[in-house]
Length: 170
Image (cartoon, rainbow, N blue to C red; front, side):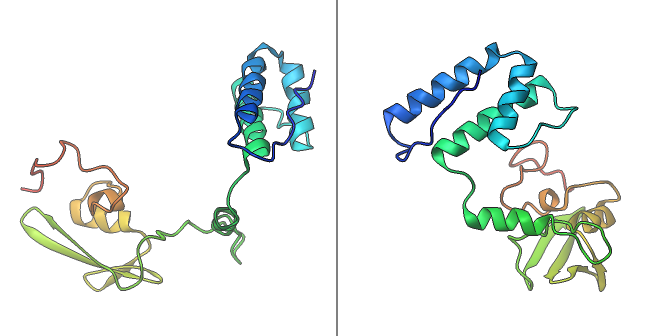
């Protein structure tokens, strides 16, 4: 029992929204076999065997919305593709901290000392040593596991526990 949501040329129209909403509302009533068939119709390949019913529902809902309203921008698709590209050693590369440009200097006070890290193309320089991640620098400084971006309070990461104004560095 396929849903047959047609691609809509104007995603902002009320008709498109109503059609997608109706299709999404019907999904939970499908049995697992029907969900697997719908996945195959939409994705043009069978779903992975170990996919749970919840993930089948989510994958179908995402694909329906993607068809009606558009998918990732070409720039985002390229960025995702390049972040998962295999390296020459057969491993996948780590996604780089794209917000930090080479030459950026990060400064953080910790236990009465100022710690300075310089962002380089090949990693992070701290006290004359090169580290492959900012989290390794944070571990060197604190002696404990920290998220490097969180430790250095880089935008997009939550503040240290305790919230603003709480001095945990003393």
